Amino acid sequence: MDTKGLVFGIQHFSIHDGDGIRSNVFLKGCPLRCLWCHNPEGLTTEVGIQYIKNKCRGCGKCGYIFKNMHDLYIKSEDEKLQYARKCLYGALEPVGKWMSVKEVIDDVMKDLRFFKNSNGGITVSGGEPMLQFDFTLELLKEAKKQGIHTTLDTSGNPYTEEGPWHEKWEELMKYTDLVMLDIKHIDEEQHKILTGCTNKNILAMAKKLSDMGIAMWIRHVLVPERNDRDDYLHRLADFIGTLKTVERVEVLPYHTLGIFKWENLHLDYPLKGINPPTKERIENAEKILGAGTH
Image (cartoon, rainbow, N blue to C red):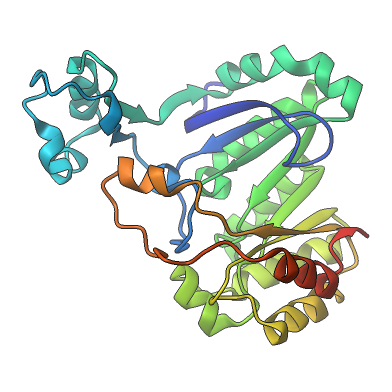
């Protein structure tokens, strides 16, 4: 259990990411660049740092590095942490901590009685957990040893059916009780515009999960002016209809609650001016996709 992963959060008592009460482990690093990303602090595969403006007192202990955060972003992990320690008020906050599998399991095990009473468990999310493949595999393997239900919350982007990677993925699936698969857009070209990546490997992973008999939930973020069109939704519904092991479909309405995270990272938010979908459009998407338990 000495394998280490870069974790940027462990959320206890979650009820939205799988059955029952769950502990969500968020791993850094993501290959997608979704225009609406709600966890931009988890995109990079290294320890990051964010500037929380309302905590800053302008004391100058950091050398006013926050005035040009790019200079800080390109520094080493150790240098970033040194700047964070200099800040007396916590305005320069590290994002990400290297943790061993044992450290994560010890943290999660505090919630064991809640798991058992609610049919809950552990959900490994991100970022994209399959970018830290060895850590994710060892974490889920150890969770199963402890009798904990396991869920993998993934975009599916790293999936491939080639070589040793696919063999490791098949092993990972042995320790995965449920896969929560995000399908951002059914149209490949639009998917590239929204995320910077193709969706071919994502759809291929969905088909493979179905063929292997592995339970999955399909999640779809509904974004006005981007993927909230009936023709796109019907195409997605048709694809979901070909999958044999989908237990639930969830429509996740786009929201703007994460914009402050982009601001803390000194990043421009790509979807400024886009409002959340209306109740009518959410209900429309849920009806077309057959949202709920299957």
